[in-house]
Picture 1 (cartoon, rainbow, N blue to C red):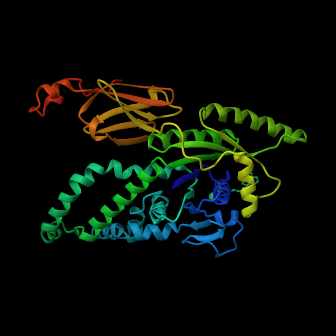
Picture 2: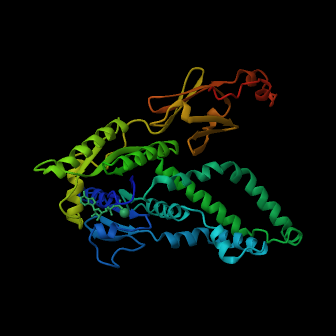
Picture 3: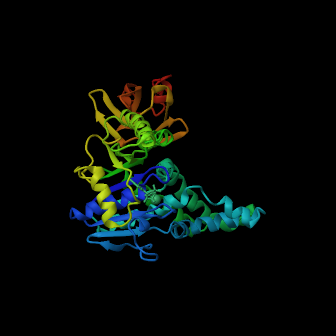
Length: 414
Ligand SMILES: Nc1ncnc2c1ncn2[C@@H]1O[C@H](COP(=O)(O)OP(=O)(O)O)[C@@H](O)[C@H]1O
Ligand SMILES: [Mg+2]
């Protein structure tokens, strides 16, 4: 099953291209679902479906082509309700105004992330050969899917203990602390949400998934798309191409249009440089809005120019581990980043990678956790971290302080 996400700034043409890409996939024989998690649903409009036709369940709009617009608010209430109710009860005891409390329990971007839980349901249903996702305006929210990984340690080791302790002491604690202790329902909800988000992250960073960036040839839009590429790679998502939409056709240009054509050509040159190694597909600015199945399919067909829009992702993914004689090398794609922008730290079996304002807590594969970091570098759009066997630990297998005993052994190498 092929999973493709389209993301990019608002208004660049994500919904139109998502619909067109899905229409092409369906035409090629794949049972295809195009699903929107963007609260500003325009998928149905792009496909020219009348009001009320497309809803929160997949609806067939063409041969093998289904459309679904996830009700983000509803998903949010289903997944977050138990946790939120508990937080609200605590805040109420603390004397916080109910309206303010309601606001405090809302996480920005949470709705869009929870909308992605629908993706998990659809993928698990086994109904589809391809799922095309019309994503929220920025890829920002995909970052939140790495939350389960970051909370992994807490969830595995602390939460179960807390749960048992709270269960045993709930009556006493509630009286002593004066705030209600979380009940089983809250723990269940937290655990379920954690597991489901983790699964969605695994699906989206898996071998059959990729993200495609949609942009228009404008400097501001390009700058954001470049940041998205870095951020998506950091969090383990594979970006497989760029679609430059609304490109002015050069033919028959008057002065005004010729000016725009030249300006766009300049930015498109920079798009090519910025996304070196990725295909950049061009989609012409049409004389009218592409609305309806035929129109969006024709537009996508022109843009992909014969390339299979759902071809299996090729080349190495954003994250790889290679075993070497002395240990292993971890490679994490970080396009557009130089060594100075990256900060690296080791925290037990986690590698903490910080790029600008983004931080990922990367859980090291089991085999790597016992190695120490011997060096790291950034080149060719990727971070490489060298791990070597920690000789100290092997000479003293019974000494668990071996790591600390060697000063500097945990240095990240730069
Ligand atoms: N290549 C194009 N030529 C002409 N109009 C386009 C083109 N691509 C998109 N549009 C129009 O631009 C508007 C925004 O497109 P849409 O796909 O809804 O963007 P997004 O989902 O990124 O917000 C729509 O009215 C759409 O019909
Ligand atoms: Mg849209």
